[in-house]
Image (cartoon, rainbow, N blue to C red; front, side, top):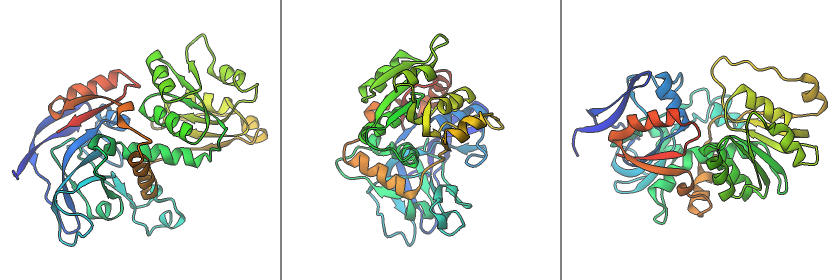
Amino acid sequence: MNSQMMAAVLYGRENLQVERVAVPTIDSGDILVKVKVALTCGTDVKVFRRGYHARMIVPPAVFGHELAGDVVAVGDGVSRFSIGQRVVAANSAPCDECFFCRRGLQNLCEDLLFNNGAYAEYIRIPGRIVERNTHLIPDHVGYLDAALVEPLACVLRGLEETSPRAGDTLAVIGLGPIGLMFVKLAKLYGCRVIAIGRRPTQLDRAAALGADELLQASSDRDPVAAVRELTDGRGADIAIEAVGKPLTWHWAVDMVRRGGTVNFFGGCPSETHISFDTALLHYSEITCKATFHHTPASIRKALDLVCEGQISASVFVNRQEPLSNLLEVMRHLMSHNGHLKTAILP
């Protein structure tokens, strides 16, 4: 194996260069993975636009975090994996010892170890992630499907946090890849789904995934009123906000029924402040939740869904590009909000 590789290095705001860098060295407990597929993500687009991520990326750094590949080297003490095996590795692992981990909130771990560097020919998987959040890919599962596990785990955990029941009406606001995953998973849970998006193409994708009603959000149509019309005036049992804007956060609260649940899955820009009608929240007993990241348990569940054939990447990924085209891909995704994922093939 060569001592150098091609990798996408982020130097700052919209400053990305695909260049030769040293292949990562591994320590005891680590593995080195040859990346076969890395998927683009809305978070990566935000990181590209801003030039950093407070918790994950300090430039200059190789970035990207949704991947699947082959083990090409193992560190001392690694017993779970061997050279030649196909693996999918999550982008983090908790400590399992802190206050939050002991309470089952491993996504809020005080020492959550993040890992980035998927937009490269090789990536080092740190020992903690190797031990707690890396899995073999079964022979019948392709790299592309396996690479979808990380975002799917986040969505799966978000849906489970709202405790959906078969027959519930669930409104999904925002039909990018994340919103579409919510649509698909909600249908698997037996829910009636109202999909709300801006573009006809997004609504068509939601319909193909089983959405029962489609609402195109526009200046001349109030999606809150439309949801209430579709639910005999009551409102949805659950509203999922998958956009990350103050307006759509308000929509979510206003379109759930009394006793309903809202999940603010889409994160608004930093330092955003939003006001809600306290009487509405109090007297209608509306539960407001937010879901961040995944846990080892949700990663395992997401992989199981992929292995069972319940979820296919073909629905959420519509382009394949070489690593050398990543800058063009990022610029395209930045100007085409809601676009599907692109598979980067190092």
